[in-house]
Image (cartoon, rainbow over all chains, first blue to last red; front, top):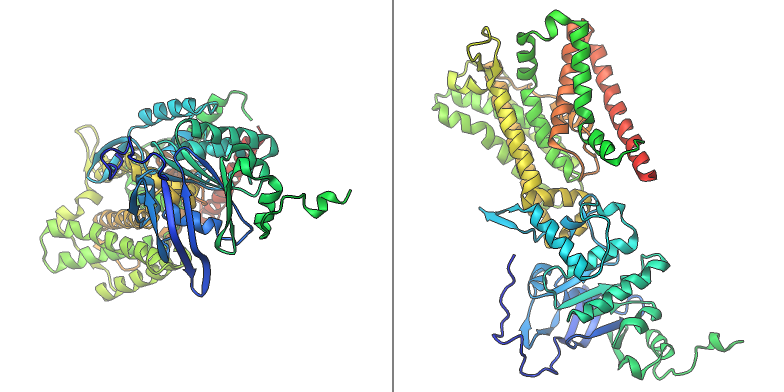
Length: 274
Length: 327
């Protein structure tokens, strides 16, 4: 499927290279009487890996679901590549290049790898609103794409249910980047993985950056954040709490942000006991 | 299991055909003069054609981990509606369209009820339409059979082609061609089109389908419409074969359709199964009935045996899957 042309004719050469790729201003989200997000501001720079941290219920996932088109914000504005955007569905967000990778992979286990990568966007001829899928082409495209990302699988015909957790996450990431994605949002991509597979997925995220993809990484694991991110921001009780380039902060400070304390440069008390 | 994965895959895919072949061989040995007679084979095909259509429709629904209990009633409603239209003197072209149309309408109601009313499970929605369609069938027909159809209306259900080699009434039934066309069409739709692949994806993981941008509700409506369409077409065949519309037709036919799909190797939990397997499942039930009839086994025993075959078929599947997981 063809991408919608970008609104700006010279999007490959933006006038202000420093302008963020994706920005959200004054985002508010109510669920009935509950305020999930209050006046949240957010920005993601070009080619950046941004870590988003916060305790459970801090609003991370809600913000990401708004950015990926799953929820509509109650108030606020989203700006992508310099122009305001509004998404009626995840599909619309995908059409401009914002993709999401889910913690539980969101793959169909009964289908082979290549079909999962192109699920919903199968290559082929369109006749009367129906796509006659070209499986051979999809297979080739999948092979090339996986090779580009340095993901190794036995065969793209393998059903996903035969893969390990790490391999599944790799397929999910491959799917998110199959159609020149510009932003990939990852919600706890390592939470469901075996320890030995976490490193491979983190390297894959670093690889995305080399391909010019901006990444938003939600994670509880400081190791993940400090391994791949350029910048980290914290939400607390549905509002902006703190943010800093990674070089200007420390694990302990970020852990402090998650718990709602600022300027916490020391080790947490329990680290100092002995 | 088997040492060679290629062989294992082949057995998994075509093993069910071997079961059909073994059954035919056994019946040939037990009843050499009757079973392989062209009259008997013609009969088997004719009698199972509408069951095959119902099973094909049910298969599409079961692929999405759904179920359609209404197909038997919808088939009866289609059958009686076209018989009543025939009595009222409509042209045969119109009457031919009534069967599929009734089926599509019923399927749309099922799909819409499931997605718009968000009923928790298709079992409930289609249990409702099972009763509604059966009630409508009796209402339309006044509860009595309507017989005597135009020859054009009977054609698909009754016609056999002797091709100059078979002695009439034996021959290749038109209904066999219809089933073959439907099966090939369905195979193409499920395996080669995007919506077909989305149906498998929804059966595998509906959440994955949703976040992939697939309009799951739209696909589900299409699925139930397809199932209804096949039920309507089955009604047309049955009406043609019996030259009538009778309001008690197809009671319990939905359960035979489910049985055929499951015996044919489709997973009740969605996402797995093949058109070829479904046709084999229909044939296994059909051959079992036919063979036991030829052997003068009572219908009560036939029912018990079919029950045993269902359980055995699924158990073999469970064993096979367990073996596959271990390797």
